[in-house]
Length: 148
Image 1 (cartoon, rainbow, N blue to C red):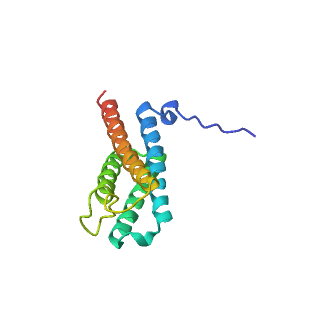
Image 2: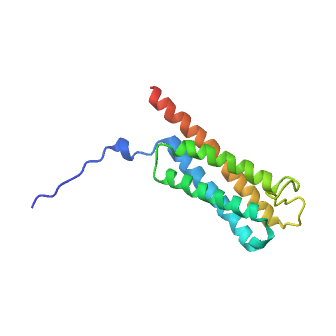
């Protein structure tokens, strides 16, 4: 009985440098995201408004979608990383680092958070911003590859 072999081109399985940067940034963002949300669980979800709670759920869904695209090496992963990374960095900054400004606030400066809460928020903001920058880098690299 003959055994069929399948040939996969090395180009299809090769991870390009920009893609590796995006994958690494996705891992950094995931760690920050989990740290921040773990801190919310530690503090109790009853300490945030329902607006902050549901905003966090929306960020979680967008994050899961964006990270899944990166893992699957989807062609849209870099663009979604830009959108999710930068919007999350901006949203978490507005919700946690600005003084109380609306129902979407969970202001750390106006509260009495411990060092872990500060570290968790800053880790997510940094990770999300890194994810957005890596998305831009990968997107530009993809555009350059198409142009050449």
